[in-house]
Image 1: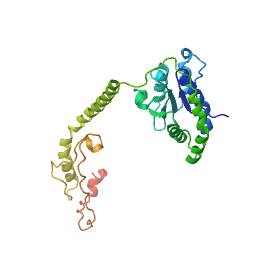
Image 2: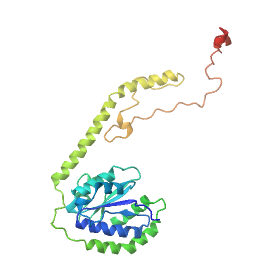
Image 3: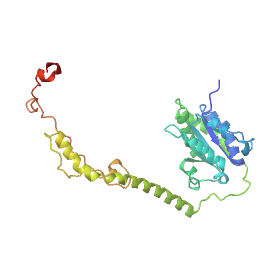
Image 4: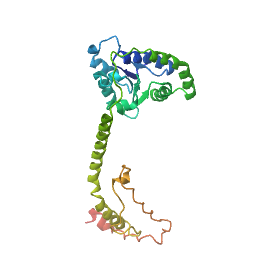
Length: 280
């Protein structure tokens, strides 16, 4: 019985579809554990049922998106990428495969946030090594996979070289203004995250005074820094970029000299008559 599909290949447009169709046949020849699913390119886009795609995506945690300059904003590409990304977790992977001269810096958000692979030999090799360890707990040995890839790459390269030309030439390069705008958007998002942590920082002075007093109250035998000595410097102690370095951790109390002679006296036992309510 054939194993269920474990990969989804997304495409839009004739050139992207041709690459996706070949990848669907080629990948299992190199990595037998890979079982790609591909919506047939013979079906017109308008009849590609969302229910059918949703069913195919159910349980699939790995996806490849075949991108070309002309389909970067295609609705079906964005829809399928969104459907795949909804299930992202520690085991889920989503890659973009860049065709037609695309480079990672040419791909705008949200597709630009996924791991990109340029359709050349070495980047494709890296992609296959990642797929190999992702789709199976019994991955092909690295040396064996390299041998398989070397033997099979020429077939994929030939197919990529024969991809149909686009109906119209689309400028793939993003403008400087577009990239700057995206950087500003990311910066604003990071700033908003920092503002949320600033709400917590306002409690740091209070904790700096409270913690030494609390420790001394619970451990009168061991000295701690006097009230007001900074023990926390802010959310920077948690590793948030841009925050102050954490303060040195005070040395742990030395318990090596403790003995029965230095231990505090035990409290006197409670009389039985007082401890037993039935004696009243």
